[in-house]
Length: 101
Image 1 (cartoon, rainbow, N blue to C red):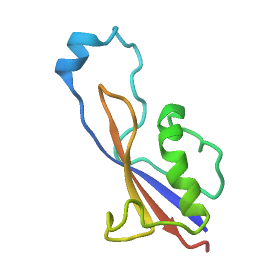
Image 2 (image 1 turned 90 degrees about the horizontal axis):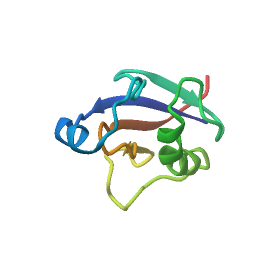
Image 3 (image 1 turned 90 degrees about the vertical axis):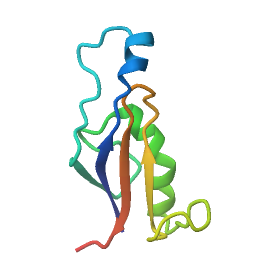
Image 4 (image 1 turned 45 degrees about the vertical axis):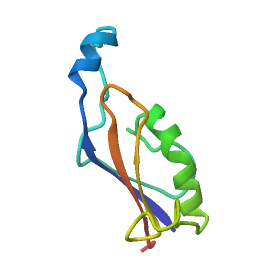
C-alpha cells in the first residue's frame, strides 16, 4: 500500500504577509500539481519538511489501513485533505491510498 500526495491548492494571504512576515527570499517551493508517492514515514524527496510534519499523522494512519478521519469527512474514507501550517501561504494536499502495482 502507498499513499499518493498531491499539492492541490495554495492560498496566499498578502495582508498577513505585509503585516507580519519578514522578507522571504525563498518561500514555499511546493507547487500546485506536484505529487509524491510514499510507502513509509520518511519525508519524500522534494516535499517541504514543515508540510510533511503536518501530513505525517494522516499518512501514517492511511499506510496502516486506517481512514475515516473525523467521521464522515471525505467521500473516499481512505483519503484526507490536509493543509500545511504555513499561516501566510498554506498549501492544501490530497492524500490518497493507492494500490501497489
